[in-house]
Length: 507
Image (cartoon, rainbow, N blue to C red):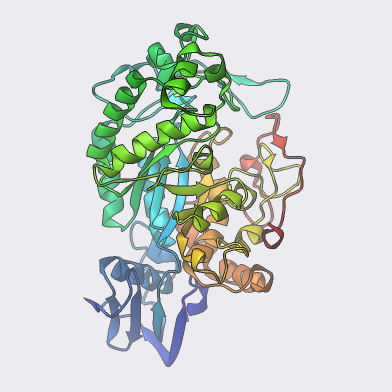
């Protein structure tokens, strides 16, 4: 018999009707407007399965639960004909805790082919995650075709070499690296995701993290401070001083970029980055200082806020909504903006208390590029140690918001995977799984306080069924015993954070 409690995410309510039998393959579906959005009720009996959803998404999530109950072979691309499947006769009533259950995939630092992105849409759907946040532009690459600005991909999508890992001495892969998605590639990804009730949120990062764009169009940079024509697409990592100039011409350029982005991505939210924008060039730029005086601003932080507010109004006028990293709080938050909180919880708490929607994704908890263990065999050690248990104990609503009206401003949670040292699909799999399964349960289920969560039961469910599902899906996850020999990367330097990771309940 299939262990129904091996479902990931764990169901909200499971009623054991008793008994079990061979699954007939008969699945009936329907809608019940009394159920909440994305909620479902799954009943399995001798007559087959019935899935009733609050909407079509709820029916789809119910199908994912039934798929789990049918055993690991249900996740293969074709039947392996092992005979009839016995399933428990149960009723499951389930609904998500958060409307935004996201995963960010950085395809700017290392480009992933379209098929790899489509595969991750499937993996998100299996885990009832419903947002794929694509980080499409950065200093190291521009990955979206923009017809009116072809050099963004002709030049900005390619770098001549790539730094391997972090630390000293620097190690280089001297091969050129790059790639981009055509408009139709991205339309295909969006449509494929929509069929699986996953929303794709594009990120076009500015005014920082823009060197690839400046390399393609030097006039976008601070030309009165540096020779922007000498810049190339960045080949190594770290926070970059080369940022966009705060001019009307730059605003018009990025309006044109976003006009094409809106044609491709129909979702409500558009991510504009706004993070790690060093202001040194603006301080040295006569053009930037004149703009500050013209606008009556106090400093460079307010200058960045002016740019963010401009695009907040621009997107709002087109029926969309701006979301950015928590640095967009600096200098004043745009009225309609939502905040993606990555630096501890402070920015998210401040934004929620000010009436702004927040997606919690603190790097101290759910940055999946960070190392999973402190053992010597971990490939390219980076960041803090985030074990599977650490991720399972992540709580998106911090204590200062819990039990207050502001808690409802936390609309969701997201796990982020940056790819400076994650260069292909196998490395993405290794960093994401099994931790993304733990995150999925946190984002979907109403779990107890982090200190009271039954991690031993989660491990049992992983061992009982979910690792076998990941095997059937072809996911190159990190085994609980440690990396396999071919998952290690000896000789590639890493960089661990010195400050100890701060537990959630002390944040």
